[in-house]
Image (cartoon, rainbow, N blue to C red; front, top):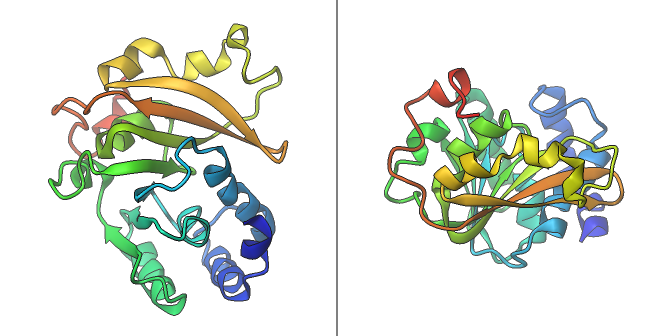
Length: 221
């Protein structure tokens, strides 16, 4: 699946344009595609029905995942009108409109929509925010059994070793439990990228997420 994405000229060109518009990071697009494919590679859900990409920006990882998870319905969520307009044009140009939709909204508001809350199998986050912000805004989208997959920092020790402490510090059990979730693992792809996998165990309490801005300004942990 990685080679197919790297060889998809239309996809690569679209992401290069996103990079020129500064909607993506500074890493070479080929590496950003590898990183995006990693979300699917580490996902415990092989063929998710519904996926939402938080803060999709220039379409990473969402546009790449649309080519990997061919049967999935994917929502690219972004609060910026400019980025969302770019994504809408790109989705149309890549002939993905039948399975990919773009939503210009704040995650805090979108997660309270009856059409979106507790409806998704997978939520992805590439650079949405700090752990507390990401889980508060991302977990309400998930149905029980769904997973939140977050691009994670590198760890110097074995990421699967609970004695390491670092993942458990960034993803504290008590706080995740309050949101109806639990930390599963740190997964690695291509020996280059790490991802935190958080499982939704029960529907997130109605009081989350708090109103727009509060998860960033006053994080839960």
